[in-house]
Amino acid sequence: QVQVAESGGGLVQPGGSLSVSCAASGSIFTINGVSWYRQAPGKLRELVASVNSGGGTYYEDSVKGRFTISRISAKNPVYLQMSSLKPEDTAVYYCNVRGYDSMRKIFDAWGQGTPVTISS
Image 1 (cartoon, one colour):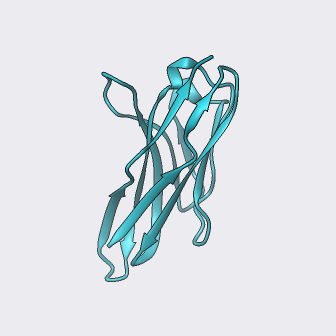
Image 2: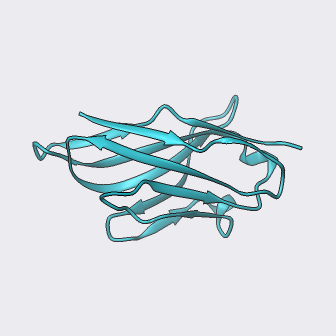
């Protein structure tokens, strides 16, 4: 079984920076992709950024140039570094990890989320 844990959320003033991390543990053979989603109150969950095992990345238009997702590493968490934060970035941020477990079965695991609040 694979577990995903996010950390690093908090309260930041507009224009500030924050980094959230995503750590996967358990019976993992390989990780193929990691994605960060967010869900604001009353809104649907949306994809913010993704990285694949080859280092390819995707960013949602509203975060391009402000957010950076780190590469997948066997030993280190995947970070989402956020800068020039705006009140509309306020949301619970969720990490999704996809890959193969030790039994060579596909897994698709979610964390519990970490809240990010941008407010003065």
